[in-house]
Image (tube, rainbow, N blue to C red; front, top):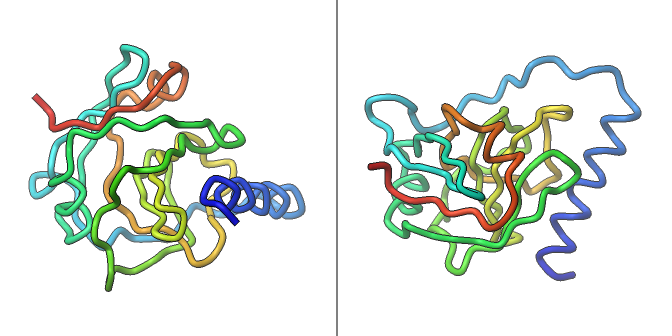
Length: 157
């Protein structure tokens, strides 16, 4: 199964599960990295819209920051996340995979070798084996989600 098909299957399963259950409580997932002063400020750009984000001060966040800037073709998967294959993913071996995410989270799927920016939280989980959290969008998420075109993630400034 190719990587894009894997992501489509992942999101389709989530939507089916979300439609069959009562509304989920707020995610209890706690990021392994920190956000704030110790984070790495970046910008997420799409269609002329710019969102502020912070990559976690974690091995995965630092590895991803070292690959910036990066531009990827993305698809809006079921109104849930902007997803696109990375030319070269960050080194995430030994990092915790989670099947939970929070609104605005930037995550990497080692299985699909793709990045996701979650812009809706109508469901709060992804299929196993999960994703590695890289960071979170702190401002401007709606504008980037509503825009069209490729996504560029670059150092802030």
